[in-house]
Amino acid sequence: MTTTAAPVSNAHPHQESGEIRLVGVTKQFGSSYAVQNINLTIPHGSYCCLLGPSGCGKTTILRMIAGHETPTSGEIYIGDDMVVGKPPVERGTAMMFQSYALFPHLSILDNVAFYLKMRKVGKDERRRRALEMLTRVQLDHLKDRMPAQLSGGQQQRVALARSLITNPKVLLLDEPLSALDEFLRLKMRGELKSLQDELGITFVHVTHTQPEAIALADMVVVMDTGRIDQADTANVIFNKPTTPYVARFMGGQNVLSGTVESSSGDLIRLKSADGAIFETKIDSAPATGTPLSLSVRRDHVALRRGTSAEEVNSIAGTVEATEYQGSFVKVTIRTANDIFVANVSDRAYFAEQVDTGDKVVASWSTDDVHVLSKVDTDAGGDSHLEGGH
Ligand SMILES: Nc1ncnc2c1ncn2[C@@H]1O[C@H](COP(=O)(O)OP(=O)(O)OP(=O)(O)O)[C@@H](O)[C@H]1O
Image (cartoon, protein in one colour):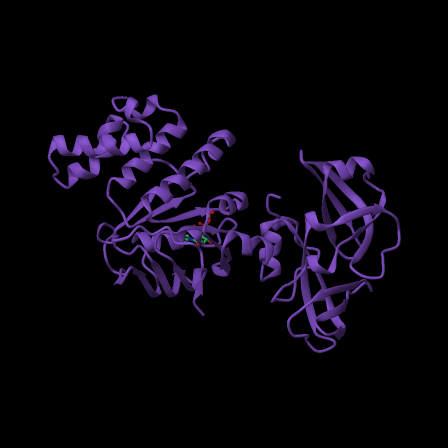
């Protein structure tokens, strides 16, 4: 299966295609698989984020696209070119690393112009083009400084200018924002996005931070131990995760499981292991007894004090923790078999405050239940994967 999202392409006309296609790509290190049978098409001119926990294979994919690593099997295309076996310089890609790796003994301008010098471009021409690129990242006024005289954010902009001067079809970014403080990270995030819009080239950005991927990407590729779980627009990934893993990893969802008890039209009822009844709509109802998993957004849950759940779409438990998040309060509830989280608006929370140890009932509407395509096999074991919501 080839995974392709349908994000809006920012492609500029008459540009060489920066579409990336991975076909059956596997990379083994010794006997272990870093990535396994990856099929993925990243449209030309899109901003793609590879998202997943540490060690899931994101960087390996990036390095194989760049040509710093060779797949054990499979093919990688950039535009119409099958690039496996080609050296990095012939691929039309540029890579920006987490450590900016600037030359400490060269001025900012010479750092940016370095690639052109290697290509024997004349001095005036390369200084002019380097200055143009520095202007683009708003650093022209610092062109004569040395890297050590710049802040982290400024050094990163230089690294960006240095990558872009090669005029790539594809820019590969490995955790580009992780070394920056929170304020700079958000600022640079916005700048990366507008730069990509302006240039219209394909950006592939590796991150383990969910909000970063959601904010930046036309296409989010969620990975788990060497495989792609889901690749789609941020909106679909967040609201319609296909697997329990993606629902949990994106962080804004509760995962519920049960077996089909009855159906009527497009409405089905499920019974959970501890007897709760969940109701949801589904295109074609599976047979009675089929196990299914569902997701419910944490911010679509209502909370009240009480000990007995309603007849449907409701779960009773004990408050395990409350965490104030500014605009909402995250209430973690221990239920009979699992953990359930409600993100309650601060207004609703303070109107009827609950505290650790209180008995509560969480409920939600049938329309807010989403059916997952895979059945949960990790009930109760989700906390290590939780995203930033
Ligand atoms: N050169 C190598 N030799 C052996 N194993 C490697 C090598 N490079 C990566 N791996 C292994 O392959 C797997 C995927 O690594 P990769 O760096 O792609 O993960 P990642 O998702 O980018 O992680 P992180 O976010 O921590 O950088 C890991 O288990 C890693 O230990």
